[in-house]
Length: 77
Image 1 (spheres, one colour):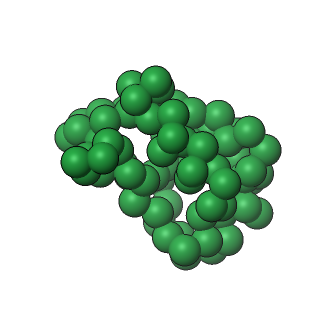
Image 2: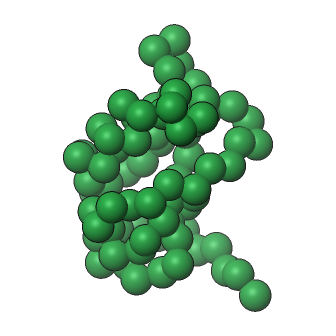
Image 3: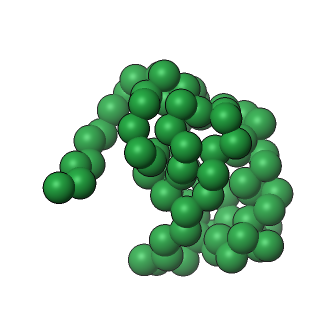
């Protein structure tokens, strides 16, 4: 059974199937709502491609995005 855990641990070391993050809608497009330990390069990559990926930050929106090796987990949800 899947389990969701909140943590303040370093995300780059967490070896799980996926890391869940939030996105918010802004006038400039979607922005990730993440803590200070989130990889800057990954955030920039996702936010820069948000429109292409269909990420809007709308309520109840779910997307899966590969982390590209920036995190130990292979996928962001």
